[in-house]
Image (cartoon, rainbow, N blue to C red):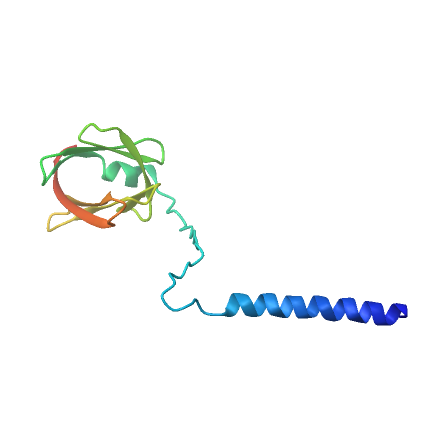
Length: 143
């Protein structure tokens, strides 16, 4: 057997193995078998709004929430923090002058809503397993 026929045989065997492997992956699951899908993660980054200090100060204050909680919002040099019912501060990332979201994406706030513009709407995911979103409204109690 000469060298060219050996190379041709090896190349043909490799091509056949590749075709068989690709075909096996494309076959549907057997009836009744549970299909396993690969996990796909999509990370989209939203451009943050370059909030100005005067805009951050405009949302500052203590808010009386409709569920009995209190929320204190304070700016700190182009950043805004919220402390809900004294559970610890959460940094809010600005999407606009009036809309913010937490870094983990589980909480969103919209300020200056309502007839007088003195209300805030807080939406948060109470339980990650159910993806239930809770909405709490509040009015500005003091600045």
